[in-house]
Every structure is written in structure tokens, then in C-alpha cells.
Image (cartoon, rainbow, N blue to C red; front, side, top):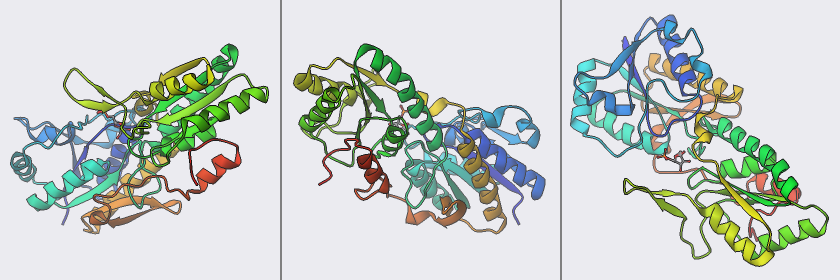
Length: 349
Ligand code: F6P
């Protein structure tokens, strides 16, 4: 019989995490009368002595928490900390099950860890990249697309005022979902995603066509993992020695300038995409996922991940998604939509 469960957020934060913690807490306490413990900072809360965990009550969520971005439990997306100590701490807590909220990377780590420690696990997908296999929507994705769309809304008037080409570099790692969706919704002229090769010559021609047809400005969205023409990714080395994605917008801008002479400016949207107030859809998915995950535990169905399919929540085997990533397919209907609107989306033929 389940009596006590844990919950943690792992990997990069995103909008909607507080809403999912709330949903799981309300369901666990109000429906099942269980105890639920929030583990701080991903699995790091289990490494500190004393452990950094808090018992969660519905009263924690009386106010504005579910409306806020971030995760009040904290998270981390660094490395693989000592498994033994974490498993030991799990055992000390006496948890009957654990809910892990993470992207595909965190999910793999958590699954391995919980299997090794014999801990009953249920996963909830969250990532602005929306790249979890067999899952239509991850928590945080809708908000990120909204932020990127708003950015295009704000770039358009300044682009028009100065007759400029504005390039917006968005996140998404190796998946082009944020770029493709925000690009269509935000009226972009060019959308570049990691999944489809492009030609600078054809982008430049497209810009020239727009100009010769009387429009004095253009908007380009580029996903951070789009490759340069030599097939390398644009990266930045940070002071801590880590190499992170960044800079493809400037690269593309410089190349287009060489062929068009257009005045170009680049905006790198960055973590703004993660910290906004969650959209109604992210709150809704988060709420549905949180309730469903607790119900799965009540049925003692473990090693599952809850997913959004056909406008509802269901669950699938966690092993079936581990190691896979959902990227934009060449025949994605949205590619056709973009092309139907006259947007250049790369060399699809
Ligand atoms: O996976 C989510 C994500 O926001 C990516 O889109 C981005 O490349 C990365 O995380 C940024 O990670 P960090 O928070 O370590 O800068």
C-alpha cells in the first residue's frame, strides 16, 4: 500500500513546473491521504546532510505559485552525482514511489537510478524543446513558443522602421519545434531548423524577392542547433569551461550580409523562453499530468511515463522513450503550412 511519495524536478527548468507539483500534491493529499515530499534541486537534495526535502501540503499552493515560472523545488542539469548516496537517501526517506519531472536526459538518469535502488518510478515530461518521443506536448513548450512568438511581434515594428532583417535565435537543442511553430505564428519569412539543410544563397534570394516586391524588412527565426555550412554547430565557450550552443544567428546574419548588403540585427532569446509565466495550455497539461501520475501510483503502475496524446493524458513504458528524441520530420504538416505561406524553411527537396 502506497503511503508516502516523493517528487522532484530535474534538468533545465521551464514554465509549468510549479503547476505540476501543485496538481500532484492536491491529488496525493486530498484524494489518497498520502504524504508527499518535495526533493530540492533535482537529486541534489538527497546528497546534502541533512537531506533537503520538504513535506508538501495543499496550503503551499494557496497563492500564486502555480501561475509562476521556474520550480520552487529548484532543479539542476549537471552531470551524474553519486548514485549510491542518492539511493541510500531515497531508502532513508522510506518513499513508496517517486515522481520525476524531467526531459529525456533526466528521465534516463532517474530511471537507471530508481531501477538500481528498487524505487517505484513514474515520469512526467517537461522540456521547452518538446522532444520527448511519443508525447505531443511537454510541459513548458507552449510557453516557450509563446515567448518566441511575442519576440517576433516586437521585432517586426523595429525591423520595419529601420528597413532591417531581424534574426531571432531560439532554443530547442537538436529539435526545431520552437523555431518552426513560433516562426509560423510570428509571421517569419525564413525558418531554419536543425533537421533541414539550408542554402545561404537561397535565403538571400528570398530576402531580395521580398524587397523587390516592396516590403522593406524581413524576419528570420533560427534554431540554436542549426549547423554552419561546414556542418559544425555554433558554440560559445563559457568561463566555467563548458561549451554551449549559441551564435548561429550571427553566423547566418554575416553570411546573408555578404550576398545582400541588408542591414541585419540578431537577437538571441535565450533563457527568457524558460522563465515566463506559464500559458493556460502549460498549466492545463501540468495539472492533467500531475493528477494522472498520482493515479498511476495509486494503481501501482510503475516505470511509466505520462504523455499527452490525442488531446488527453495516457501513459507508456518509460523504456520505450529512453534514448530517443522527437525531432521535426521532413513530412511534418507544419513544414507544408510554412511553405504554403511562402516561408523559406530550407532545402526540402
Ligand atoms: O533543454 C532545454 C534547454 O533550454 C535547451 O533548449 C537549451 O539548449 C539548454 O536547455 C540550455 O541549458 P542551460 O540551462 O544549461 O543553459
